[in-house]
Image (cartoon, rainbow, N blue to C red; front, top):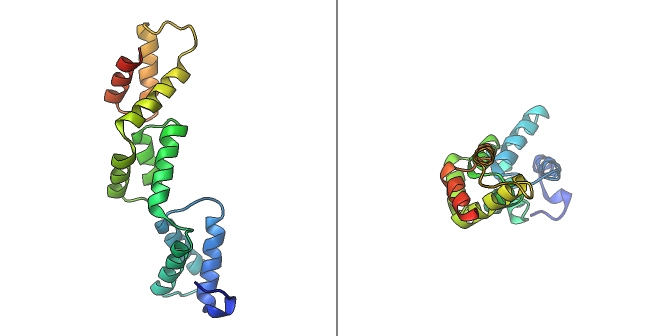
Length: 166
């Protein structure tokens, strides 16, 4: 990590400054920052070596601006527990951000536990059912099942949650 602007070659300083600006809006994965820096370099007629971009990424990781493992965990838990979205929608979101499928599967296997899944489904069902509604109604159950499916939850988990819930 360079302490002063003069300690860095100008191209690395320019790339590092661009990376800081890019990371200021929201947390990003390493591959997103690499892609951004390559595009930035091309748009600004810079010709960095691969080592220059790697040096910037290493510097960002050392300063804790980039931490892919923690970001996978935060996104997965935020979408599951706060936004009440199921594993299928979490997978779609991470794929859209360019994450590798094997890493996504490992993250889902690790953080989407049956207990967390049932808790999220229970919150979602409670939110969907109005107070005083007849929960034995076939139409209401069908409506809730469709809603939970549209939120990315697997059908088997939905039926299990129904059995446990009421």
